[in-house]
Figure 1 (cartoon, one colour):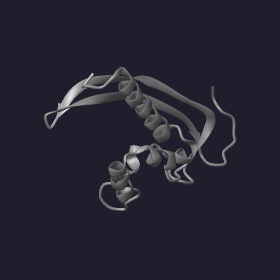
Figure 2: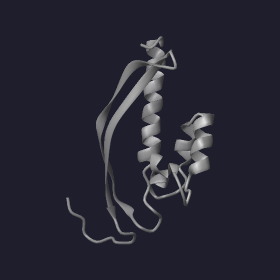
Figure 3: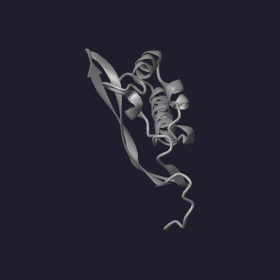
Figure 4: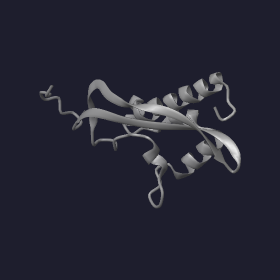
Length: 123
């Protein structure tokens, strides 16, 4: 596909999965901490752009690339994070060159509560 071997396509899918996990399932990132695992998975060009815009007060902020709750506003109420979705690949072209496109469609559901609220939970 797009001139890549099955092994290379598999590696691209594993990388996309790792990016999803780092951006939406990493506990420190969810707690509003610096998204270190996600940053480590980015290419040097992506990393540079992400870090330049991380937590900007004005203009475009790259924090939206990851899921996290503002410190002191929420905490996970359960160890369970529900995930549903799929990932597909297709061949495409960019600037006349073949490319592999990885499409991800996922929904992440978090049970959260106010920090320190250890009251009864539903479900």
